[in-house]
Length: 99
Image 1 (cartoon, helix red, strand yellow):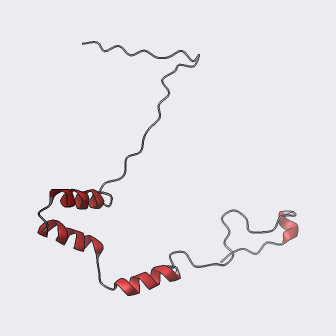
Image 2 (tube, helix red, strand yellow; image 1 turned 90 degrees about the horizontal axis):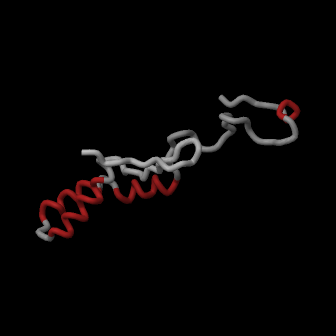
Image 3 (tube, one colour; image 1 turned 180 degrees about the vertical axis):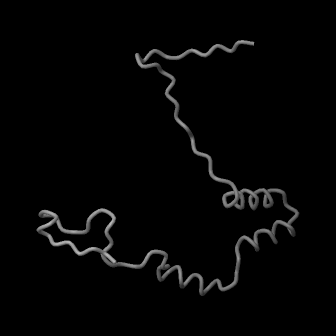
């Protein structure tokens, strides 16, 4: 249950405090469009259909596209990592390849 706070306790600005909820949809409740889409699709599972297409098609480019799409749901997407290789006094660090 949300804590009710008087405006005099908070200052001049209205609204809720950080972390305080004052109404709206309950957490986890799907919106109207999501419910409508689930009703339209029924038991249809796009991943199941993609797997079926993968098994039945002979074209390698289509198979590759299907695998590429399904990988998004199995493996996490990699992000670029920035690295600053300078020392505290801003001189660049040189790495020699010693064999």
